[in-house]
Length: 306
Image (cartoon, rainbow, N blue to C red; front, side, top):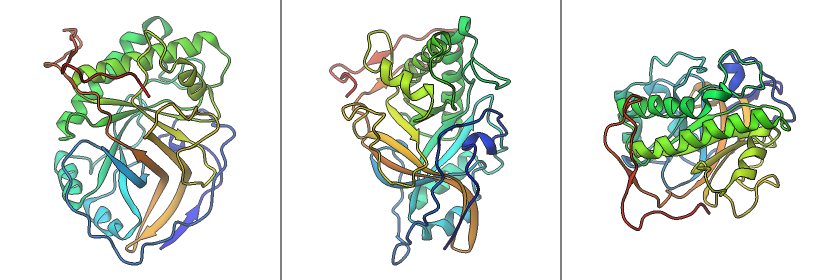
C-alpha cells in the first residue's frame, strides 16, 4: 500500500470543480495501516450505511467494479458515492444499479452523497434562493430519493446533503441554509429515507445546525458527516456537543490524497464512521413535486433526536 497526499486545499469541492475556498482545515499525511490479511467480507443488502463502525472513503467518480474488488485488500469497508445534485462535478459512468448490487455482494457499505444548491452567501454559481429555500430543499430530496431508488439503494438508507463551507455570522444566509436543510430532511423522511448533512467544522454550516438541533419546527439531519482534516480517526469534536448525533456521526479526517491497495491507486477522502441505524421508521406513497406527501409513521416509532 502507498499513500500520497496533495497540498492542503479544497475538499470534495475541488474535485467537483466548485469554486469556494474552505478555510481552517489541516491535511493529515499519516498512512493507514493495512490489515494483516484481506478480510473476507460477507454480502450486505440492508440500509446504507446502516449500523457500521469503521473506515470509509469517497472518490469523485465511483471506482470501477474491478477497482472495488482490489480495494477489498484495504482497511476500508464503506464507500461514498455521489448520486446527484446540481453541483455534482464528476461524471459517474460506473454508478449503475448493477454496480450497487455488485458492491453489496462484496460486503461494501455505501454512503450516498448529494451535491445540491449551496449557501447564498458563497460564490457558487448554483445557490439557494432564500425566498424559495424550503421548496428547493424538498425538490432536492425528491430528486435524491428518485436517484437512490433507481440505483437500488433500499429505504432507510441515509442520503447525505453536501453543504460546502460558508462563512458564519450572516443571519439571512444561515436562515436560508437551515430552511433548505430542514425541508430536505423532512421530505426524505416522506420518501422513506434518512437524511444526512456534510459540512466542515470551520464554517457556518456546522455552527448553524448545532444551534438549531432539536428546536421546534426544525428537522435536524439524522446523521452528521463533518470534515476536520486533523488525521484523527474519531467522531468526537469540540465543536459538536457530546449529546448531539450520538452514534450517528462520521468524520472526514483526511482530504484529497492518493492511496494504493491491491495494485490500484485512487484519489480519495478518508472517513471514520460510527453509526447505528436510527430507530425512526418512515413510510409514504409515491411522492412527486406536484403532489405533496403526508408522512405516515409506524405507531410508536418516533423518538426525539438524541
